[in-house]
Image (cartoon, rainbow, N blue to C red; front, top):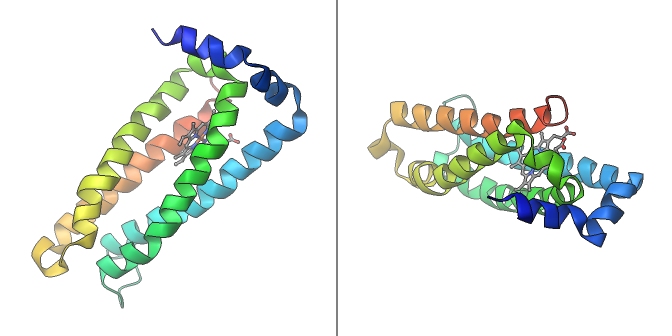
Length: 158
Ligand code: HEM
């Protein structure tokens, strides 16, 4: 169903330029990983706090609020550096089960982070209780790992 769109992406002059340039593609890929570190750091700091593994001097809501701009800018960077890679290798991605697994996890992880996780992280800790905090932090780590691991496997499993 989406094949014509991927073929369109693959055949754009810009996509040819990205694909044919060793430097554009590799610098973009490196930047994707830089933004991944920023984003993953911001996500993990809150999840570890929810799990009760550190930063315990500060309330969860405070940690979540401080981490939020890093998470948002990190994600924007991931998106902006992910799109050129997608355009440059569109048909490879289209035929890669790992790419679609990454997209599936990404959709669920985004919704989860913006709804349940945000609500629990920002809530009064005495009302949420430590068990729910732990469950929410753990699920968040599993979902984002579910994005990153297939993403890494795209290049290894075809
Ligand atoms: C937001 C939209 C995103 C797009 C459009 C995107 C797109 C891509 C593409 C096309 C690749 C190249 C895969 C390959 O051919 O090897 C890639 C690599 C990768 N992405 Fe993303 N990505 C996005 C977000 C993310 C997020 C949120 C994460 C992690 C939480 C992530 C983690 C990675 C990793 C680990 C790699 C492998 C890098 C490598 O093997 O050198 N990406 N991404």
